[in-house]
Image (cartoon, rainbow, N blue to C red; front, top):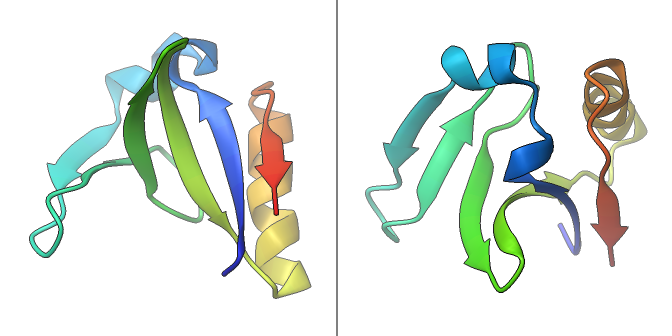
Length: 82
């Protein structure tokens, strides 16, 4: 996947953070987070403006819409970078 969606960690609703599952990727050590009903796990990264979560932006339109719909449904602003 050549595009990614980014959200600010601070924009995630509290109820989603309470049930989030965090773990480290065994291969590259990346810190990952799975949020309830989100179709993908995201990678947590630190930036100058705070923590953010990076998601792959799928080529498959069904998967892409599932992620975009989930973000929108939960009121989470996101940016897609190609």
